[in-house]
Length: 338
Image (cartoon, rainbow, N blue to C red; front, top):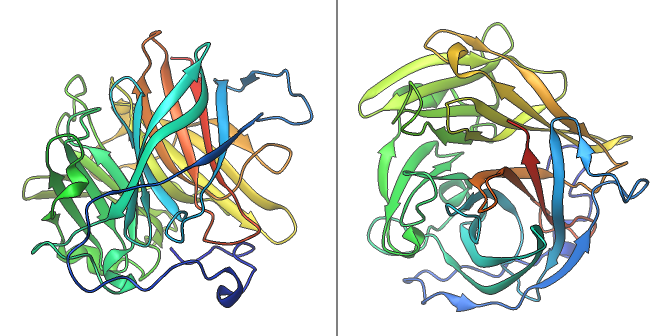
């Protein structure tokens, strides 16, 4: 997505780190060397672990000497949180193994990158076609069957292949006529699929980042097969919605981001009760956490949820550095007290 107000202040010619994409088919995934540095969430209180309904489980600042690294807007983890796929809004994906020490996120290893492929097997060309913003597992934690949302050309695309579904061309899943109401760069930023144990099992919820209805709330849809049902999400002040994740019982977690020139970036997590999610509803819920520059944050855009081997339900967030020299790629993990 276009850098939000207050971010991406370095001109593109200075921060220009994206090479011209090839017009032919993508090469096999390439190994990439990642540099990671551990971070604490609250530098002013480095021993603090509890933040609202969340408990800190470690974080990393990530960098790489690779022109395609960065811009991560979507994130998905496998069932036990040992492997992740991060999705760039310039049409690249990063796969890596997560390393834990004492139950805390401590590093990344065995990383590879490659381009998303369109039907026919070639990489997406222009920005308006490859602006990928969110990624989910069709079956919770299964990285061999994934769905990606794109904005600008607003659509959902499904990818299926053993191990990492993004290694093969995708198949369009949804491109509703009603998506044409979405603003060009304020579209399908957040999607989630409800799990088998929830009343909405099999349905996908898609939420617009900044396209609002007549009441000033975020446009949203419930999608399944050929069915599409409208609903809305209550807008909270300056916050825009950047990702979503469905809990095992069907509650929905929304990641929200706000930015100002004076205050810098902020993020919040909001929990919507499953019983409230239905066609025609205006969704709202409890704010689990709200963080600002007193914390280790950046432009937080990607959210994933997994059940850790120790039994904890964990939320992992990734930031979009907008390929800017003054921003960072951060990977933050928390345990959610259910």
